[in-house]
Length: 276
Length: 312
Image 1: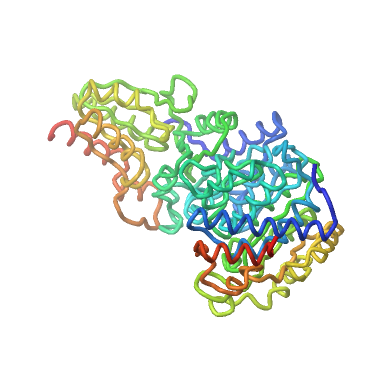
Image 2: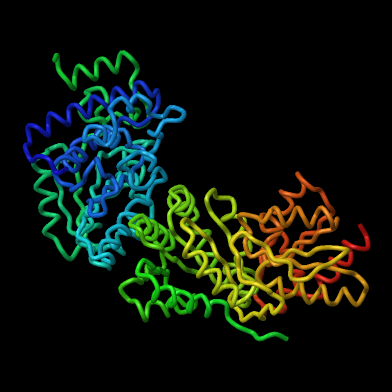
């Protein structure tokens, strides 16, 4: 049963392993999205190991907290965390994107632990809001978490959901923005700026928390604060680094959708794991 | 003339009845609850109703999230907004995940009338039918609408149901209740069979009566379920009667006519005439004026079926 631990050192060590799994599975898959997976490693590690109530042995437990990956292309980080928490065997990770695999190129509900398939951007916050309202109708107290990409929130559907979540005062909904500053065509500021981002969410009626999205103790505190906000949805604006943890991938837009070569994989794993 | 009733009144009534029977029924609308009649459900079950405002993409996303939590969700708007604006949400979220969302749209087809082309959904069946897992239904009158809503509430997974804005005549020839996936022969014929759904079932029956006076014997089939198609019935008829017409208040591209053509062209080729709206946008006018202008009034159907029987 989770949550398991609030020990930051332990969580940091799990995050390293998650990061290494992402590199390995993407190198083996030969295609996929490393940059936006690596930027969300601490967010998902914290959620799955120390925030959410869930049971990998019983993925459909009806009182579970829900997580919805709106930026479906970042599925490698979710797959790695689901494997590490025990939803399925780690060996499945090496089938990513292969014909017949349960680990599809974008998050897919055939994978144990995934609620709803995603991939087409901009829809996830509505879905998460539906889940949050579902708790209200069923008189349950589960919470719903939704990870949004920064380029993704250029979609109008996100703001429809933002307006409705505040209108319906859903305190059990917590969005996390993986603000890694890059999208496929370039930097978010160049393509379609989101700023002033915190003001926008506040104006839409949300409680906002801005943190360093790679600092696990900050993430734990932010999620705890969000639980205390009962009458509004909360968004954690996580300042992150695209490609975080691998020097030659950090801030490099090319690694949004390019996987490491065998040499790059070796170098990346050395950087992440050190000379263990 | 048969009794004239609003199908949407019976949609609203079916929702309220379902709401009384079942706690898992949740209804959403996008600022059209008065017109779609979901407001009747809202008045009785305010805790299980959500008005999402003018935001159809959000309507479908929230419906999907609720369905994933075990609810049977009815999501309503006008046909044009319920299918076009949120097509991606319907495809990638509702249908790809086989979620229990029933999209029930009113104001379908050209008989929306005076509101004009922007509000006349003539392509909704085509774009819903193309999505895997989606089932498409067009009831012929108010009573069948009630039966459809009650029936699909018991069948898991996504549905698209469309009905018109205007009052429409009751089809008195219906001998039994709606059965999902089944067509119903309302009248037998020897020279030609006419398949129809929605309002065109009534018009097709009247056209067949007219043609009988000219010694042309025309059968009429009510096809409320457009997808999955009742292939057995269509093939059985086409094996005996070699002239088939399809009449629908929808574009000739992608509707029931296309579905039947897709089947028969491969398995049982026959002479066919598709009676529907051409590849054009509509315009303002009264429903009767528009049906005449776009070839869906009784006289136009008579003339097209006569031509199929006599000249091909």
